[in-house]
Each structure stands twice: as structure tokens, then as C-alpha cells.
Image (cartoon, rainbow, N blue to C red):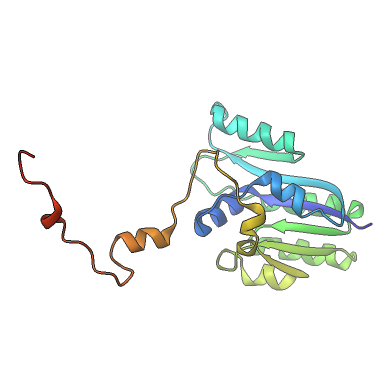
Length: 192
């Protein structure tokens, strides 16, 4: 059985979730994608804005409990830029896996992807087209569109952030082609 390694850029997945309007359940990711493979390891790269923030610590603890090897570093206002960490882990661990599932959109990883592919490894890219650089998409063996996995990977309730359904907002703003109600006619009279 082929061995799979996951390399998940947390900032990238967060930005994908914001764009898609739904949260990704990381437990479901680590349960779904290794099916048919032996899981070698699941790396999760997490930016930390405040080491004293209890919510961030709980999130990291939950990831570890789920089975991720968490790589974190503090960021203060700058982009997280985990590309060097991801590239290093891809190269160092390549002898131990056959297929890598990479969730990142950074073109800086193209030379690393090309290097592991010359070692006979497969690299599958997980993301959404609008956030993935075309060069990295072209360098991988397969692109997996995260949008197509909503039923399998969406987090049910819980969690702190819920992203709005943009289509509902557009409809409420009268941008769906339907005329809006005249609010003045339906407002109660003063003193009611």
C-alpha cells in the first residue's frame, strides 16, 4: 500500500475557507484523504499571532490530538510564509512516502515539487483555483478542487468563525433581480 503524507498550510486553507464561505474540518481532512493509503504523517503549518491567546493554543492542541504534526511560528503583521518549512519537510521526508497531498498555493514550492517528483514521488495539490498559482498547479501530478469536497469536509457547527453565504447577502441587498420592499410603507407609525 502506498504511503501518503499531508502538508497543510493553515493560512492557505483559512483563506480558501473564507473565499468558499464554509469552514474546513481538519479532522475530516485527516480521515478522508488517506483512504486507500497508509498515512505516513500529516503536517500542519500554523501561524500564531499571540502565544498567550488561549483560543489559538486550543486550536493547536486539537490539531495535535487529531494526529497532525504541527509546525507553528509567531507572525506579527507579516504574511506567514511557511514555504521554507514545507519545502524542507517535503524533501527530508520524501523517502518515507509515495504520495504527498499539499494544500498551498505558493509558487515558491515549485522547485521542491519538481525535486520530489524526480525521486519518483507523486504530489497532489489541494486548493481552490482562484488562490493557487498556475505554476504550482502545473508542477503537480493532480489538482484537487476543495470546493468539490464541501459535503465531505465542511465543519458542522462549533468553532468560532462562520463565513457568510455571499449569495444570501446579495439577495438581501436587492442585487438578485428582485425588487426590495419599500421600508417606509411597512414601518410602524410613531407611538405604536
